[in-house]
Image 1 (cartoon, helix red, strand yellow):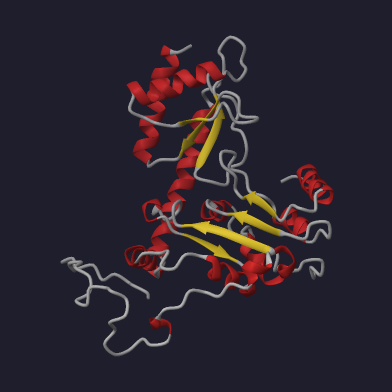
Image 2 (cartoon, one colour):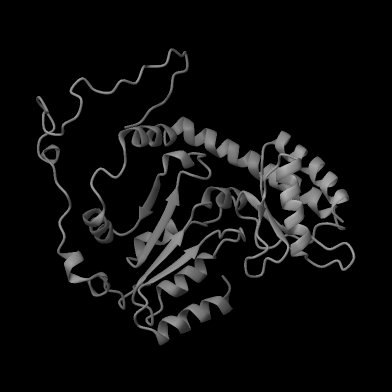
Length: 309
């Protein structure tokens, strides 16, 4: 469906539209003796590893939707809507139909930004189904999709993410970003991680995480004195569960906080206390670990639950 109500120029200040991207001599000249960038002319000092490995390197709900649309109808100054899909700490994906409804609403003339940090775990949980908002990009110039290498790729240390958008918006973002904002080591690691072999390995590990998530869910469901049913969705690499008061059977922030602290301080297992978040009373967010880590988690949870009743 066309989005005739959207105009990129209408939501961006003229001074931003007038910007030109940073240029250096390398944009015009890439060969010859390059003495323009004050770099070490002898190149980097990384020692090639001695290895036999032949690496393959290459250079919401309808109610919530109605609330969002009502807010944008009543306030024309709103230019950005952020959607986390799946969200953290809820782990629930936003249906593409919901995103599409907002994109097509004539009452909102700004950009919809979808944060898909955990999307690889989501797609593994729904094989064969279109899940990522990237599938909508060809038809919606008012959409931006954010992804990262911090989660499924396990590369949080390189601090690298992606913004996927229309060519027109991408050019404007390029005009405004700082020059040389991604270091050469970061780029090299990212290219290695995006090679065919690395992508295959990442997907295999994601499947192990999904298996581990199922294992933990089954174990948590049997701890009925201490854990309530999980909250949110199962579209990421973590589970959010409420810690119960054994006397009342209701989520208990005080007990959850004590369990969280005891696990970290006496058992050497760190999870996250999320009881202060809206709708998350008594909740712990547990990242799915390796098989061994998951087993240790359950053993030490059992110990702490007996100590803190």
